[in-house]
Length: 456
Image (cartoon, rainbow, N blue to C red; front, side):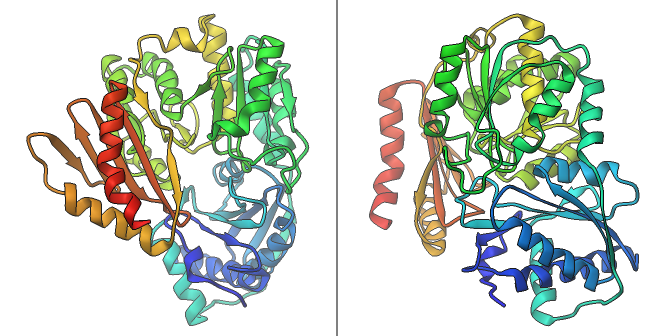
């Protein structure tokens, strides 16, 4: 068995297939998860769903995982190729389900893969993921005679949203599936509702031949931008490899930042939920939080991570939340998890009902000078040591700035802010900067980079 302990991340298990983990590990993980579920519930034959994305390695990993499920006595409900949100959907809608695992490398390169794990209706993270590692290392497995069945989850998924969006007006939009799992269902879903989108790179292909499957990086959306301009579409919507992250371009082809997407959606959500709480992560801009306050909402800044934001939305009973990285969570009319196909429908609904463009809808969002998310490849050790060094330099608030240590370090000045945090999924240091002026942006960015750069 190959098992590099680094794959046990904060909110999923992920690494390079056949380097960091192999199929033998997948079998043990499946066995460990059944053990975990049986310890939590006392159910001897728990019912667990299992889906996978478009990556070339996903089917064999899924087969190995299913073997581990059955070895622990579970009844395995095979979903086939689906999006991560459809995997989550199964835990809410399939009868008597105790959890599930989605085999996916998300937005990472083709040689990566991993596991997003749900217990009951919640994705586990932190110490709960580490508990699975402990079970594997101790080989403290339960055993039993398991079974399996294959179900059609796509039909109930499509029917659920066909009912919700039955009155949605068709407007011209372009979708970019990035050859990910979205292509397995998006045409069927959107056309069932009555939309006729132009769809790019629809066929699932785990080699991702057209572009990297991360729509939150603008260079990956050049084809989408070009098609929007060419066709006169109202917007372009991109999906990542497992369709839980959304990217957006407006009718001119301009790339819309993740916190701008949150601001756009918040207007609609707060109309139906006046004074509602909106959750954002530490990478989102001050102008987004101020925009939500101006709408009468109650914004809360929280830690980055899809499982962490999802949990915070649930705890705060918030109707909506999101991250700069394109994860958005609707709990007003949906289940509170991140589904980019559903988010796309909500954005189309906003545009269709308002008759306005995205720039028009965001015209009261103050302009700013900001960087996108800056991701610096480094080592697991350095990403933490650099953040520690920044905390030593800026850790005590002064008359010139305030400090937020909820996730890494975020330093707020009178004219902007700076953020540094260690990624929970990769050996990457994450930085972001914003100011009301270009000069301020350069000053704030320099204040961090003069500490960071010598340590890289």
